[in-house]
Length: 119
Image (cartoon, rainbow, N blue to C red):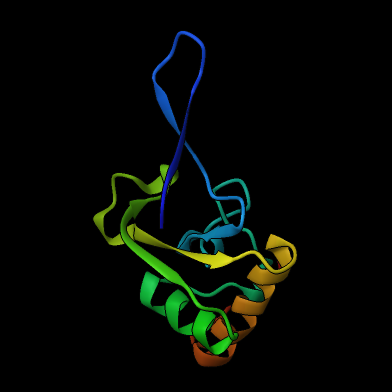
């Protein structure tokens, strides 16, 4: 992936994110977190302790082709080595629709970990 950069007046170069991709972090599917703490799907679709490999498997089962970035860290969990990694998928519709698609696959595969609590 070719990264694009731009320069602001009086400042250094900054990274310009690729708008054709959606960034997906495992924290988005964590049932133990609140929405304020980073969860982006309803508790109904969330699972306990999601990891990058689970998200990769679920995204492939959902028909997506993830680009894997294992070294990246979510800003809220930068200090936790076990929380490293994210995927990028092609933008085909809204981010919430893509997350629901992946969450559905996650819930089917890891239903023993899924919670039935509302939140």
